[in-house]
Image (cartoon, rainbow, N blue to C red; front, side, top):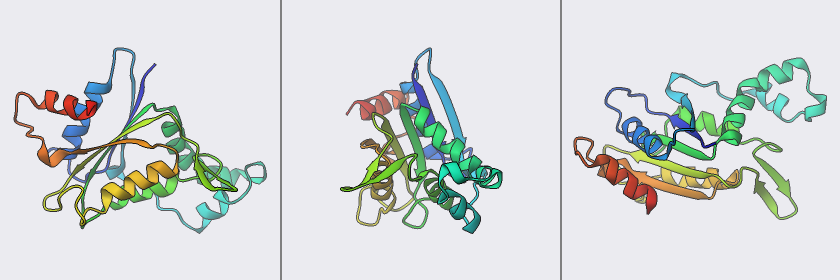
Length: 191
């Protein structure tokens, strides 16, 4: 079974280029038996706080029910990543970087012993054999330029948790009014 995790972070809905292109990517990846997990970060995520940090740094076997409750949403997000074979992250560039909600998601999924581990040679990602697609759009910052801090950051974070097969899709270069938009997305997916 093919499981796809679709993460949207744009605060815009109807006119969001990243949401539209991410939907095309998911449609191109999905098969008849695909399971699609959708996570809309713009609806809100908690930020990590002292209580979360305390619970996270407590050894799993020593966690109280309160610790477990504090980490339950983070555990859900990690579980979604663990299940997925393909991850599609849709992110506009806001003020040269990613939306705060997407950064909050990163904070909640970067979990020692779950998504990475410390070794004698440094951190090692635990989410192996996954493919990620990062759909990026900006109203003025060229994707991949020295002003784009989102793309390299997201690639670094994904590699940190073990996802090294990452394709950046520049949604600025896709004409959503074109009849051939699905072919353009498919071409970018296969390149």
